[in-house]
Length: 163
Image (cartoon, rainbow, N blue to C red; front, side, top):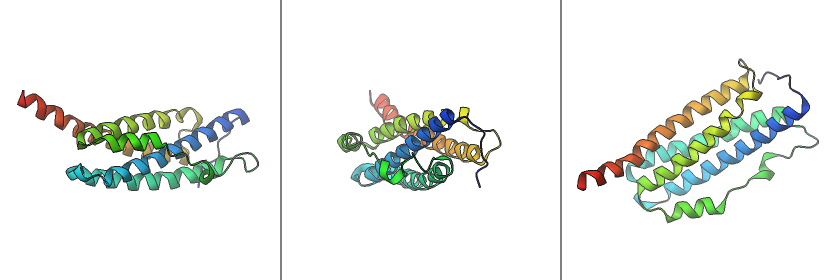
């Protein structure tokens, strides 16, 4: 399934840590999108929130495959045991009332995750299955980023027309 990479042990270890962190980022995405869906004021944002939630679930599964392929069974822990959902992150989301505020917060989160994905490129061969998965995730998360950017701007435009 995933073509093996020839990489020194220290680089492989770094790569596995980055994959683990990326899985945790996707877990955070899953929780944030789900929590945002629970808010009453989301209206037209609900469809993108649902897509974001499901993509996070799918991406976690694909990242797990990569992690399981590259991890060292003797030293690297299973991803289930490393789940770190940041309570502060969710608490901040609960403080936001406007859908444009939620869109802005999710957009910033997506931007951070895009950077995490880009940091993987130095470890991946161009034609590997892992590279293809990372490219697909980057493309899809970039789409979410753009959509959320437009949703965030809607409120600013409304405010500038009122002034």
